[in-house]
Image (cartoon, rainbow, N blue to C red):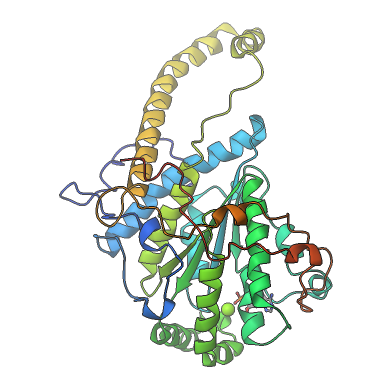
Length: 403
Ligand code: AMP
Ligand code: MG
């Protein structure tokens, strides 16, 4: 679904259930947000927070949102290409084996034009990557202006698999601070970061791994090491817990997605991505030359009969563009309005991150240098105390003032 052209018919129905109510009862961005008191052990991984429809409704809604995602992504791209735009979006997808990372990439990122995407999967570091600081490969993979970057795993593996398997001798609190400073720098550079952690239950992971073994067409997805990783389940949960509360910041918050229902995880991440893109208030770029001048120049090269044809289609297209622009504005408004609704149906509350956010905002830039990744030693400049670890507030400015 690379374009919304010619697809406005029926679009108004798919976002609502039969009764005309919206299917998201509450902003999933609020329900899934990781705050300082987040407790992973009490997460119901089969839950579908905020969603009032069924799985089919979720798939239909995701496709409808896909049209919006696609249009917003094209605007983002156009702004960078022709409008001097510097904004980009980065979706960070974390989760254990079988959590559904690949499904998110196919069914959420896949809603957008591949030309506007920058997908990067992070596996075990190569020999070259190991010679550098762990953020080296991440920095090189950041989306350029106009792109929607997708990280399939990320620098967070360096506080998860590396921690659980004791692959490096690291001060984890310092590494969390370093990651927070790195992400602050990325956000200040114009990138909106959306971080999602997909969480399946242990039972569901067992079922999905067994399916990979039972089905010859899925054998290839299985890695014997997956069973070793699974046997360290509790260690991974503990590593995720501390990672999540220490690196969910107001500028790059974590959202934890219950992922036993694949359809839920996909529609929830779609909504989060739509909110991120909508927050950029993307318009089409205005060009630095006069359209009328160029039309005159072009017309001088065309014969009169073709010019009549062009004038005819210009009239129909003007109407279509007008309709599509209005429909797009409606959809963006719907996304923004939902983002402003909290669990009580009112305006979203400020999350109580604590009071030393300012300190976190003013830390020195990350300068990780060339320290080897698995040596795990943060660069001296990057070790400057950030102070604000775990203290965040809502990044959606104006959100609580919206209603
Ligand atoms: P997959 O996502 O199934 O292709 O697997 C990628 C593997 O690379 C996973 O087992 C990750 O834990 C591993 N991996 C990713 N980043 C790192 C890292 N920084 N250090 C060690 N292993 C990693
Ligand atoms: Mg795997």
